[in-house]
Image 1 (spheres, helix red, strand yellow):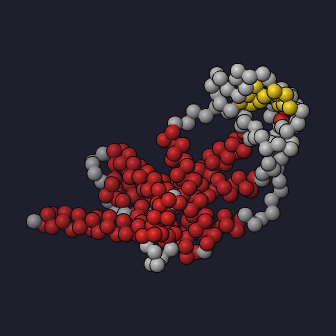
Image 2 (cartoon, rainbow, N blue to C red):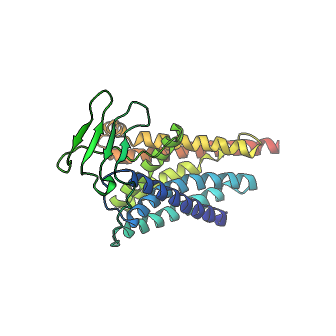
Image 3 (cartoon, rainbow, N blue to C red):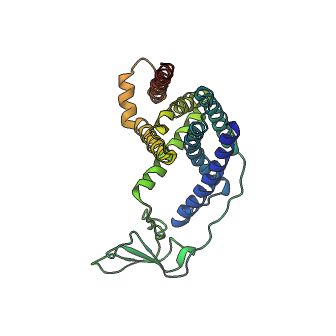
Length: 298
C-alpha cells in the first residue's frame, strides 16, 4: 500500500508540474510587454499547484486501490494519512526554501514581426492593436482599430497606462475544467500561505483536509463496478474541493469569524469544519462496518 501510494504520488506530482509549467509558460508569453521571468519562478509556482493536484488524485486512487484489494480499512487510512502528510510537508518545505536560491533571469523570445496584430477577443467585431515594430518595441508606435471608429495612431505609449491585449492564442477549454484548475490553484495558494505562516498552521490545515479526504472510502463502495465507484469518488472529491474554495472566500471568512468570535481566529474555522466532518464520516463508516459484522454473525 505504501509503495503504491508513493509511486502514484510522485508520478502525479511530476506530471502535473510539467503540465502546469507549460501552461504558465504559454500564459506568460501571451502578455506584452513581457516581464523578465525565471525558470525557477515558473517551476516553483507549477510545483505548488501540482502538490494540490497530486494530493487529491493520489488519495482517491489509494482509497480505490485499498477497496479493490480488500485491505484492512483502519490500517489503510492510517497509511494514507501518514504518507500524505509526510510528502506534502516535505515538498512544501523544499519549495519554501528553494525560492531563496538566486536564479538567472531568462528573457522572453520575440514573437511575430513588424505589424503584429493583437486582439482582445476572437469575435468578428473586436478591437485590435497593430504593433508597427512588433514585439521588439511593444510600447512603441501602434495603430488601434476600434469598430465603427477611425484608426488611431500613437507614436509611443511608454508613459501611458494602456495595456495591450494578450497574444491571441486559442483557448477552448470547457468551463468545468477551468473551474477545476482555478480551485486547485486556490488550494495550492492556501497550502503555500499556511506554510509561510508556520508549520503549525500548515499542519493543522493540511492534516484536517487529509483526514476528511481519507474518510471518504464509503463513496467508492456504493456499487460492485469499480469504474462507477471511481467516478463517484471523483464527484465527491470535486465537491470537497469546491467546498474548500467556498469556505476560504473572504465573505465566508468574515461570517465564520463573526460566528466564532472570541473563540479562535477565522483562519482556523475551515480546518475545524474539515476535522468535524471527517469525524462524522469516520464514525458512520465504523457503524456500518459493525452492523455488517453483526449481520454476518447472525
